[in-house]
Image (tube, rainbow, N blue to C red; front, side, top):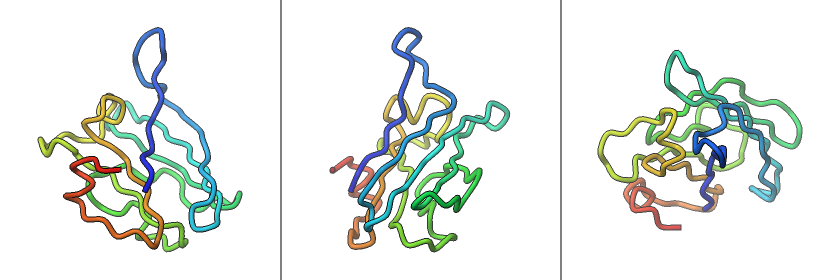
Length: 121
């Protein structure tokens, strides 16, 4: 299990509204992420590539659902979790301040949302 964290500007403390990075060795595949913040919806969304091939564009980050499930491209699961169980939504600051956290699980990992909410890594 891995936690995906978004970066913030060291001078302003605010998150960058567009962030690109990759993760390797997830089910023997290379994942590329491009997270973007939508100011109108106060939501983050992401594009994903698998081994360099674009698979999804503009997938909204929503709570407590496998964000990869509808797509079936065999790279595990991605969950956004309100770790404090306070009803926090994945808005501009929540993914940065840790009240909502992103967890990437490989196919072999089976973890309950309650365990993710507790932040066990």
